[in-house]
Length: 150
Image 1 (cartoon, rainbow, N blue to C red):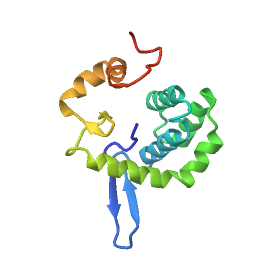
Image 2 (tube, rainbow, N blue to C red):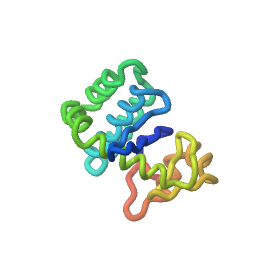
Image 3 (cartoon, helix red, strand yellow):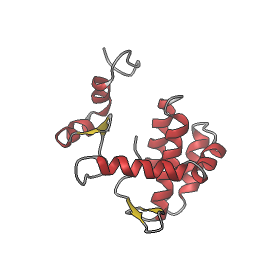
């Protein structure tokens, strides 16, 4: 998952980079919590990571994303202190990396946009969005999780 959406990276002449999100600072904060969840959970607990994304998407407090992030972390037994620490340390660099990855995709894309292994296929988006699990299972190599039908 690449939490970046329609944000933009502004590169200042002072070698400083700044991210501006389409829907403002709370959206950027939500992206930051999602990036840190990726960083902390992607390899260790991908199912909890997906549930965290789902929780933040379904239950966002547009005025207090930290509150939403904390509530979702508590619900899923994710260490919120580790997430919060990441947002202040590794998080900004993670977001900039996700911005670079998003820019590298072919042209301006809508949100959500799903790319597998950084390969964005515009013609596949409707099928992916309408049946994500089956599409993901088809793309997986090797042993597949039990959620994938044989």
